[in-house]
Length: 164
Image (cartoon, rainbow, N blue to C red; front, side, top):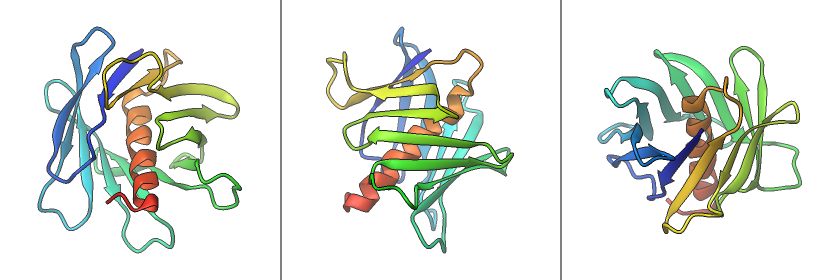
């Protein structure tokens, strides 16, 4: 499964569609305006909320959380003891950890679980400017979660670089 994300600067209040590889709308990213903290909702085509992404308050390091049905699902933050600035860890509430590494700001990175590729995020092979693809490799993977992880790590990397 491949999804095309039109890479706008993620601003509060911005809404935009993520399309599948056939050009059909697959998910809506709804940036919530007038919130005290940065919040995005990933919705299906019927505009039902699949996951909510929030910037975490009062964290020592920039952290974002992903929630499903108003319950925590995952926490995303830069890996603490990594020599690479472009290495993030996703901690799911069930204890599972996903690794995200690559050139985040260039939109060339991978999401892995225990060394197995779950998703490849890339601008390669795309002629549309400001668009990147989220290629979900495993059929049984949670595509909404992997898209949310990509949105989180890009946003965290942009914040770290000062692109607010």
